Length: 119
Image (tube, rainbow, N blue to C red; front, top):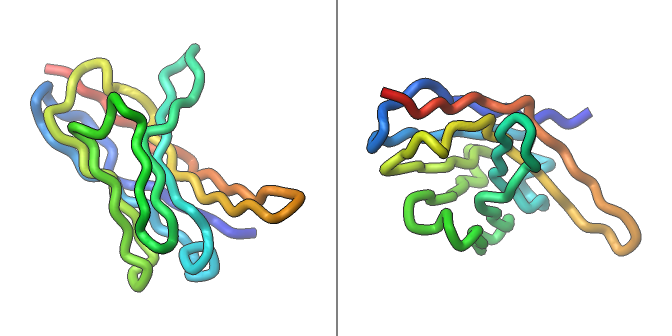
């Protein structure tokens, strides 16, 4: 069973920055598209950004100004750099790995890391 693990969450003041990390096995990093999502209790999980194994990125429009996704395939690590954080960014942040086969999808989720933006 493949496993992906997020880290780096915590409490940060409004206007502050935080960098989340996600690690996964080399098998996943060689081929899977990776992504960051977040979820507030009672609301749907929303995509923040995705990045392919080749480094192509896609952002939710409202996120691209303050959030930056990146990955290092040799370190099998992905990051989400978050700046100018706001209280509404408070959520559980999840790492996702996804590969679309012709007739099926392989997908893994991390356990999530809590980000709280509060003074």
